[in-house]
Amino acid sequence: MTQRKPMSKKLRFTVFARDGYQCQYCGRTPPAVVLEPDHVVPVCDGGKDTEENLVTACFDCNRGKGRDPAVRPLRPAVKARTEQIKESEEQLAAYRELLRAQQARREGDVEAICQHFTAVNALCNRGDEWVITERGKQSVRQWLRDWTVEDLKDALSISIPRFAPDHHALFAYTGGILRKWRTEGRQ
Image 1 (spheres, rainbow, N blue to C red):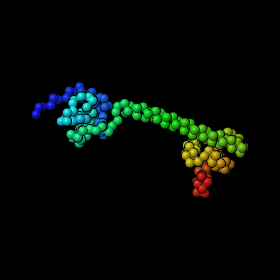
Image 2 (image 1 turned 90 degrees about the vertical axis):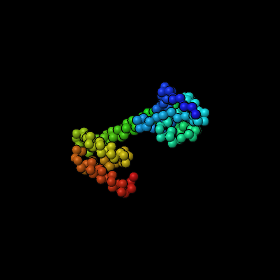
Image 3 (image 1 turned 135 degrees about the vertical axis):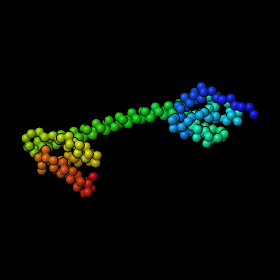
Image 4 (image 1 turned 180 degrees about the vertical axis):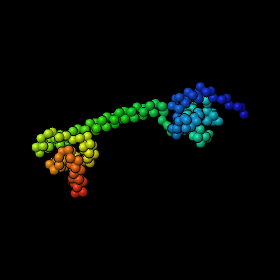
C-alpha cells in the first residue's frame, strides 16, 4: 500500500475561501471549529485531491461522516448564499423603512393629540395657549399602543374641562377613563 501524498496548503485554503471558511454541513466557522477539506468521493474510492472533489468541513462533521461519500453538502453553494445575503439585506432595508414610516405615523398621531389638547383648552376659555409637556407626550405615546387617536381625543375632551391644563391629575384622570372604557369593553 502506497502512502498518500499530503494535500497542498494552497489547495486547502482555496477550498476554504471558496466555501466562505464555513463547514458546509453544519455551518460553523472558526474559531469555534477547526476546518479541514472533505473529499466528496473518498480517496479510497478513487476520489482525487481536486477543488471539485473537496468541500470545507469541520473536524466533527468530517469524522462523523467517515468514509461515506458526501452525497451533497447541506449548506448551499457560495452563489446561492450570496443571493440569500442580498435578499436578506433588501428585506432588512425594507423593514427599516417600515419602522421609519411607523415612527413618523406615530409622531403624527401624537401631534394630532397635541393640537386637539390645545384646541379643547381654547374652547374652555383658558386664556393662554396650553400645550402637552414632553412627559404628557410620553403618556400619549403609551396610550396610542392600545387606543386610537379618536379614543384619546374623546378621553381628553372629558378630562380637560375638569382640570387646569398643567395639572398633573389631568393625565391620571385620562388614564382612568381609558381603563374604565377597557373594562366596559369600549375597545
